[in-house]
Image (tube, rainbow, N blue to C red; front, side, top):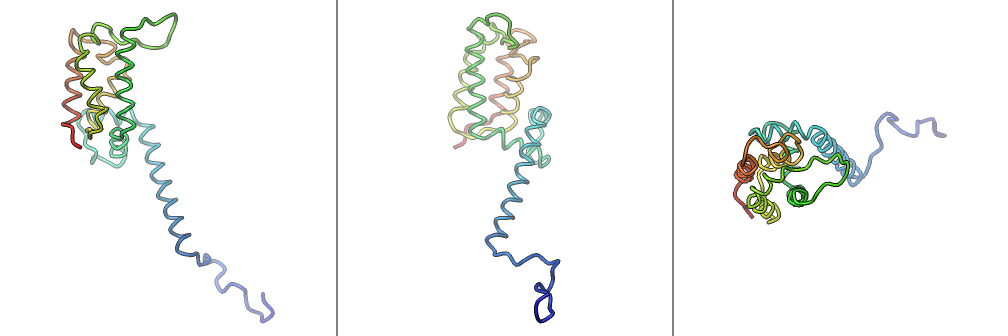
Length: 174
């Protein structure tokens, strides 16, 4: 209470009048938190979402799948996928020494699909847009130990799968 007998704040329960810049900053922070939450959820459920995208689910199937599609098509993700293909070529030639948890790619399939691998690697590094379905297919190929890269179904299965990936990536658009 003040000397005049009035309460210093007319409505103590109401928030103070913040300047517009502070309110804007708070809304930006809330937006950042929301985007970060969606991004973390998409990474947490990456395998399931990648399988859905590879099977043909479009990025408009839901918010989470749209976030995952966006993650897969960034320049950083394309560089990682291209790096994964380069590692496959290298690991198929190099001998794994000793005990390791690394699943080696099938050497014969990698050698047979060398042209497709090189073309796909160039396509990912060229800077053009890629479709999320193709990126998801390639990510699953590189990370799934039961994929044709590591466990081929028959001769030429890796090359066929890579051609499907190239088709799913779409034509390069700049």
